[in-house]
Structures are given as C-alpha cells and as structure tokens.
Length: 375
Image (cartoon, rainbow, N blue to C red; front, side):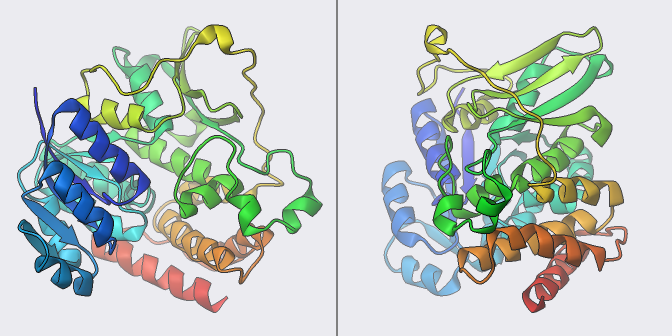
C-alpha cells in the first residue's frame, strides 16, 4: 500500500536517504522542508514532485518561490504548516531544537512521526509522548538503535522485558589515552570508524553524548526506567541494540550499518518490504566485540544519565548547552575535552523545574544557550 509522506530536513543525510527510500517504495512525497539548502531541495523537487515545500530561511524561501512551481511555505511557521498537511507519516529529520515545534505540530494533527530528531524526546519527551497518546499518533524511531529495540519488542509483552541495551560504536576515540583526548582536533573527532553522519551527531558520537541522548529517548519511547536501560560499546556497529527478557534470553537486531534500513522500517511499520541493502554475509563476520563504556574518559554519557535522573528541565538544559559547546569545538574555540568539563559546570548551575508546555521547553533551551555562550 502506497503512503503519503512529508520529509522535514530533507537536505540532511537522513532526509536524503528518506527521499531515496520513498522512491524505492513508490510512496508519494507530499512535502519537503529544509533549513536553507535550496539547491538540494530543487534537485529533490525534480525527483519526487512534491506539492508543497517549506524553507526555514525566509530569504531563501522567497527566492525559491520564483524558481519552482510547487507551493513554497516560509519560515518556521511554514515548516509547522507543512508538518500538519494531510499525510500518513512525517519524517522528522530536522537537526537541533528547530525540529521540536514541527514534530509537535505533526502530532497535534494526529499524524504518525518517523523520528530522527533527538531533541523532540530529549528536551520535551514527556510532552511529546503525552500528545501522541492524546491524538492516537505513533512515534516510530528512525535511529538505528531505537529501531532495533522496537523490532526486538514486536510480538513481546512489556512485562516480559528485563532490560534494553543500546550499542555504541565507541567513536574515533575508543582506545585513545587521556593525553590524546586533551589534544584531539576537529578532524580527529569527525573521523568516525563506522557511520557517516552530520557534524553534530558525529561529534556527539565521539564524546558518547549521542548514547546518553539515546538512553533518554529510549526511556520515553518505551516507557521504562533508567535502571532497565543499558549501554555497551560494540565497535563493529552491526548489532544495533538488543532486548533481554525475564527468562534470560535476548533478542538482537543485526544488519549492515546503513540508515536506509531503519528509515524504511519506520515508513513501512509494522510491515516490511524488500529493501535497498544486501543482507550481511555471516560467514564473513569473524569478530563481534563488546565493552563497558568508560564514564571517566567520556563524562558526557554520565552527565546525560544524570539529567534524566534529575528530571524536569534538566535534560532540555543539558542538550542545549551541549549543542552550543559542540559548535564552539567545531569553530575551534574550545578543546574536545572542554565539552564535558564545561557541560558539567553549567549543569551544576541549573535548577531544574517541571516543564509546562513547548514554549517553556524552548525558553529553557534559549536560557541554556545564553549561559553556554557566556561561559
């Protein structure tokens, strides 16, 4: 059965893969949204002929209106308007806090969301899950780890789950010494051994912050306490996560490390369809390694776990500060080691408060960014 799909963040790596998967499945792409990359957007318009597009950058949107025949929606309001158009599912792949309002808008409309935007659940998880339940909409994860956890739970009863385990590649600094970490450069941090991602996600992988954010997401997605969610380092990135049950058995999801697999699963869920990727040849797999994460060398993971234990506004504050610090590192204003050190200091200065609504989430986010920029 063909579906109508809206892709938010279509110019990024997840968005471009989602366009390709939609073409492969024969799904109709109703709308596309980008931040400012209208050159990529124009190529995608030629490929899938959407009826609507949205551009967050108003100047770029107004220029594009003169160059294409489809309807161009403008600014953040335009992106939210696009997210609320009639569709079977919205792919939410806008990076950062800019993706929060559009995700909430899609859920408000009662549309299923294939979620790649971490901030939606890290910063506003309780509000998002509450809205999804209220509107009878599903949040289906695109992250390979959460997709794996979802796949392993299909057909199982929740009270039979003992624990969830998220796998981490360990990033480029898995075996680096403390001295090497203190001297790490942006090029070192971007040299990920197994995945090709955007800059922000790749830096988060190098600090293991990405895994901390994923634990928070799993906590909300699967409604389990932190005590039942674990992290293990798996350098080969072939087992994407696994679920352990009360009888002592475990289910693992294993596949090539290609994001088109979890994207397609989210779009076809709960069904499956022939994919674009060749399955693994198990006879060629000689080693699968697993290690406990080193919280001392990678404190960002521990700080993320602390934020969800603290609750309220702390995860939102932590996430926003981390985003600013990653930006400062990319701009070579601070060292890699400073990301964790400055994050811990700033979190110690934040008094967590209960989150009231999306506007409150965004105000906490703004305050966190201001404090991080002044640090």
